Length: 174
Image 1: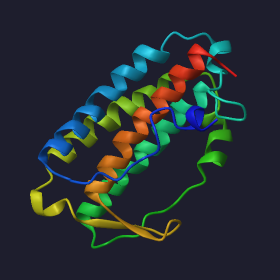
Image 2 (image 1 turned 180 degrees about the vertical axis):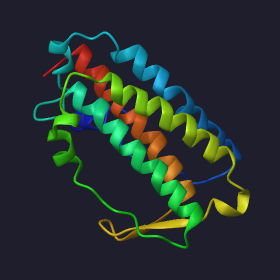
Image 3 (image 1 turned 120 degrees about the horizontal axis):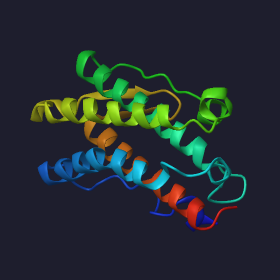
Image 4 (image 1 turned 90 degrees about the vertical axis):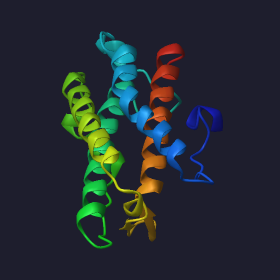
């Protein structure tokens, strides 16, 4: 069950946040929308209901969740760059996934959000100066400070993590 839950492994904090790490993470942000489109666009409604493990989100919920989550990522980056140590707002992603906009077959709007947010996020990330990468946000739910380096690592993993879920749900739905 652990392999179904974490098909690419659990998130690991990188040992080093250097230029090579950032270049690779930025590339992952750049390619995720295309990989997602190539994987899900054109799937029939019935297949969008497929799940990657018992009691998991469906493919359509995963696509909508990536849009929601990466919108939050974008906002968190902007807050960290424009405010001094801001507190970010947590949200209940499971409840969001049950709302009408997060649990329907019309995934194209969420794909458009992901494409647009990733384009803007990549432009923003590429503009970050070396001394800004350690700017932090505070996440009250986990009671931890998160640097921009950490957020870059987390969200680049997050996109790949859920893309693997979707691929598994297509290959072997539950």
